[in-house]
Length: 447
Image (tube, rainbow, N blue to C red; front, side, top):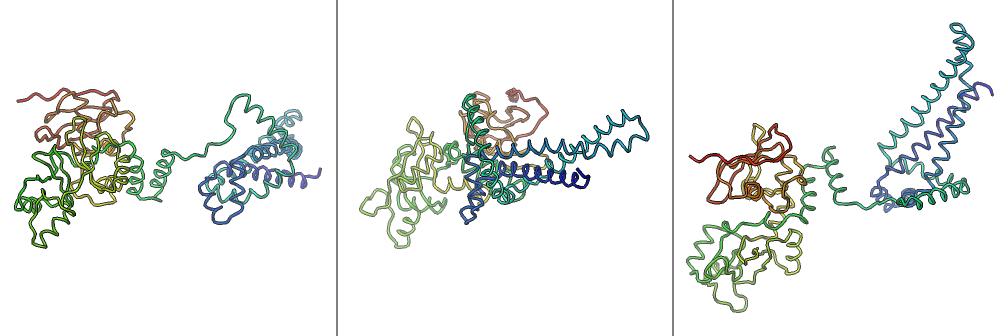
């Protein structure tokens, strides 16, 4: 075979091998969601790619047949094409036998390098960068080759299916998208600058609705502004003016005897019409409404479902002893989802200080704590026994924390900075050089 023809044949084999490599990686890396969007927009090529991804056996059989044939032909043609040139160049500096050996090795290395670079590395990198765009270009020719090589494909595919059944291997790709997949995609988009960090946080918060309990988003018992059935008109007006809210819990004698709730607009309407306000009167259209009572172990997702079924947006949370532990509104749940995308009405629960430490409210949900310090929540000790930072400290100390008490977990130190009665107001979190073993620091001696 003439040298120009041989070189042309090598170049053709490299192109065929590059096409096969590109076809293989682009089909494997193409995202089904992206292809589905293109197919829904009317792209028949995307629909064909989706059909192949559902049953990719024949497709990859054609790829492997082609790549092995090209590799064999490339070795035969390449060795015969380049070896004489290397031998003739080396005969001036080496013996004929040595020149022949070195020439063969040089020819083999050269041809192999050309195939590795131009038919393997380069096309595969291109296919990984934009798999969807490339798979649309190769799916048509590959389907033609699947038809032309149908007998050989059937034989090899049948043998492969037999081996798969024999070794009980999965025959189809699992294309289910889990919450972890969506979180990973959102994180990757945020790191690439395609998604705002607040939007990524909102996506993570949506999935946390299934695990976060109502206690992580409720207004706690000591912060509830409530009215009593026996309150006079003047007492009600004074309380509403001093502590304005959209909804007020109404109790009989004490907070644990819940009677219902009233909406602030209903109270304002009475005021504007110069009517007296009485919570005891219950004619049609009275002020007092029946309140939704939910247990404290519900998740935020379950509370949303309760709101939907009851057509309410306000609920009282009670524990197993029927004592009120807090209240929660639909706005509380939505604020948990939206996170930093909405302006909080209260002071931020987590503040990053200039020295790298964090100042956190004791009622900060433990999920927000681990996210802020970039810790793995799955490694938390006795996970599930607490929902807030204060609960974490109580479980670790096995008692009510006092000011200056400290807990070490992993490479982080949690020090109680301020306590109001039995309520933990502020906790300082610092990163230390300690090992990953958890320990509880000795409480500071009281003076």
